[in-house]
Amino acid sequence: MLTHITIPFSGPDGQQCPYYIPRGDLNLKCIREPGQTCNFTCDEGYRPSISPQTIACGSKLVWDHNPAWLCQEINCDTFFEGGYVQFTCSKKYNATCSEYQCSYGYAKTARYSYLKCDKSGNWIIPNGKSPPCVKCDTQIPHGIVLGCAFLDIPCYYDCQKGYQKDDNVRFLVCSTSGQMVSWSTNSLVSAKDLCTPKPCPIVISKGAFSAECEGVVGSTCRFSCEEGYMRNTSLSELTCQTSMEWSQDLRSLCLRPDGQQCPYYIPRGDLSLTCSREPDKTCNFTCDEGYQPSISPPTIACGSNLEWNHNMESLCQEINCSNVFKDGYVPETCSRKYKARCFEYQCNPGYVRLGSLSYVICDDSGNWNDPDGKSSPCFRSGESGNGNIGSIVGIIIGTLLARLIIFALCIGLIAKCSGARKSQRRGSGYVGSRCLRPRENRVRNFDTIRQQHDANCMGSVSSFESPSYNGLYVQPYVQRISTISNSCK
Image (tube, rainbow, N blue to C red; front, side, top):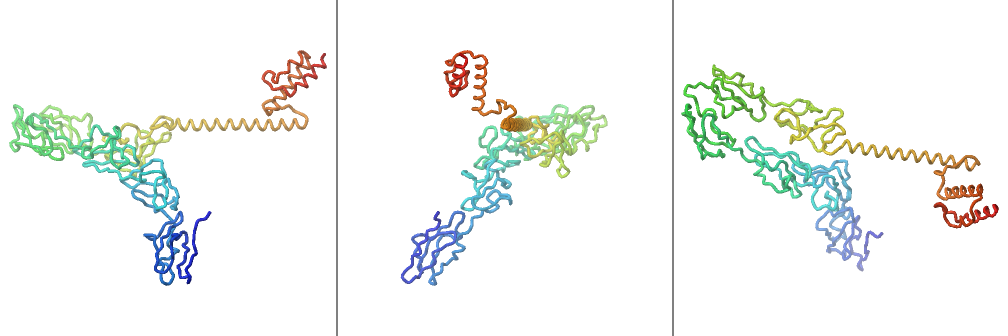
């Protein structure tokens, strides 16, 4: 095949620059005379090293660029926008690579795709219009997005303390445009609406806020106390702060005139807003995020000495998950604090990891669980997890065994027939019908009919004039049957 077209035309005095360019061609209209410029192109797999692709012929009949360097081999870089290929991948022109990763904040356009090094030296998805990795807009005010390794794969998100998640959006998905959409509805979501402030509580123990109080951040509210209790004289109104807490503890607003109440402060926790803190009364309490009650149920009693029946310092303890959980464990390298994530978790023998789960999280109950808390991180081999892996493996193994058995039976039959044929050629032995070719089998069946005819000598030649007999083609042997029939007359 002709790959280069060169025209070694020269003027009367031969004053021209060379016409040969390694791995490329000059434009066919190129004159190559001193002071003239010429365009050039490169062969497939090579690209120009200068732009524009123009060289000039000098007065000494030498091009202003070294022709040997004009066309260079195409090699894609290891890194591309939003990702990179593994070092094991070839980076030459037209090379393909399925082992590529996207950088943090980017997601793969196609989960099971491969990349190709194109003529411009870029990694692309073959026949694809999208780049290999799309930047996902994972910025959520007052929140964080976890995961998003692939497009159309659900991501978990969480909100900071004092903010609440949108009840209608449980998971997010990175779309091909790089925007986040709701996994369940496939509709675009507003990042600022995913984590909204929690309203400040509007319940006061032994009192109430004014009717117009809504507990909105930045709002100021007045309050009143029930009969038999007096207002804290140092407070007249409260402000709802950005932390979703009032500027004062609600349990200090309405007090008994005689001061006969237990303390309202619990380190790393809170008493119920309806708690009166009076002697011989019990109160429920809750712990701050990241802490859990040390007693069950979380109830304490106010004694006649105005002290609680439990040590307040030890009521709320920091959440720490164990290194083991049901059917699995986490290595020592993983943090065990609340909301810590562990990607290196392992399952006990006989159990396998949940296929779509990449990490476990230490939840508010002190247990390792999947981010949504809907399924166990490990399940028994053969049972249904996310996809019945055990059943699929069983089907594959069963199919392979069945094929092996059929193959073995065929090999055995071939060996048996081969031995039978050898015996027949030596003048001994019997070849079964399963070892005969179709024509041989037809002849044997005809011979059987002939033997029956010879023994009984019944019927006439017309009985065999049909080309078939009981489904057997016997027309070539009608003459033999006729001869036998005549001998019986």
